[in-house]
Length: 635
Image 1 (cartoon, rainbow, N blue to C red):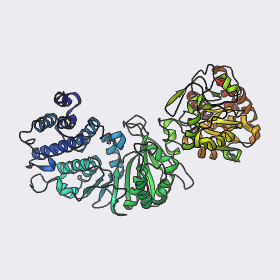
Image 2: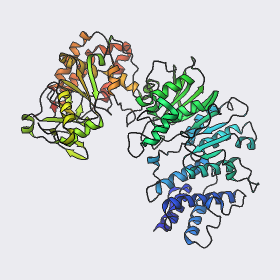
Image 3: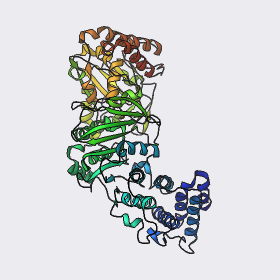
Image 4: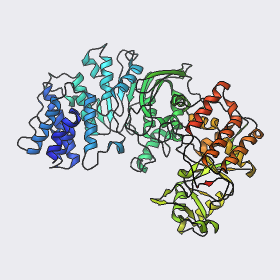
């Protein structure tokens, strides 16, 4: 069956599947990790032979497939069948072939999602090359580095651009790459040799590029500062919130030694590659990088943004709105020029077609988030909130920690009506929160791997070492408050006027310092202007493109526009919405509160209708039949 699958892979999925097919054949007689390496060596040897260089035994492979070894013979036949269908093997074809092979590894050890490997589409590579090397690099012989080079797509494209003005032999010496994956490094050297090498020199094969394209971790073994004229690339996206991609303590220590305060608990390594790139280019040098959208706004990337702004000017920004990548995170691409930021506006491009969008000003020194540079490209209306207070001055705003989550999880159980009547505390997860409504008892919650219909904590339910922590949580949350969900399309805040509910991480709790301000605070959180302000400052940090992920820190900074006393009417409408008997009535009252809020005056009169329509169209549509209304106790 494996033999048949390997042969079928070429016709079923295109010529680039030949590497995966060869690997699967070899995996019948050797470990999968070894099989991939042998298949890569065989592919390299075959391509070198076809280019006119005798390549028996190159990089672990040979043009005869290993003599009489049946598996190697079949693997070579698979590779040759694929190459017969392809007239132009280059770095992009090699990258696709290697990506397919990683996906096909039968032991799962090559999972490219776990490793953050998503090779860059040619159109995006060309866009960044044009923005960074469109004038030939700005110097006579620009040295180009890709610090996460993969199979060499950026380097080959850069070389092609530079070859328009230079001899091909000269171009090869200008291209340098680093990658942590030895097989990707081997394929990158091969790609550069195929494109720019001297195929007639028997001693001048891909191995001659070992000094230029090396296997290393660029973050821990970086090139010297100011050693290149341009740095390009698409570094791996490795969320530090996922166990499979999080750094270990030793790596974290070494990165902190190298990058200082730019390394925080959840800093994505992709952001550190941006830090590295700005340091590595000479004054006036160019940087072009593909990055997760979270780099623009994530709290733990703020030090990187500060470092970059001190050393470079942002020249352009591209925002992916059309799913160019398979990665589930939002994706951007930036170009920068090392040197003090001037007054030049930032050019912007959007979507698959790289359509030009209106330019914006450089991010200022006071801009903790750069999310506003991209948010309007996704339709977020621009707002400027002016007020004498921030929400943090009026409220105590907190988000729970992991230990608090597990303290609640250890004590949670199903809570029937008798449990609530007996003093039990309903546990509220983010999925139970809608604007002015808690869906406890309607929407189930998954807590610590179990699904609960009516989760709660009974009096005396504290267990084990969590007793003290849970007791403190019960006391701290036993006050009138608002519960704010994350990963939503607008700010979704529901009131808990009696303090009976127990929010579980990552729900954000907003406790007014004056309990009498509860409804006005609810109106502030539920106003269209507040949602637009938050959306523009947390761009890219949510799991879904266009969603928002408010944090406790960001909500503390939220300006409260107008006079606080002017929020009375909106607060009353929000209170009525919280007690509405059906979803239609609640929605109508929320719209009324939105129209009454002083936040509506934060935009131009002609834009007020656009802001309201944007917010209204993003309100959740769940009916909430039988839900706990925010103005009543659960039953």
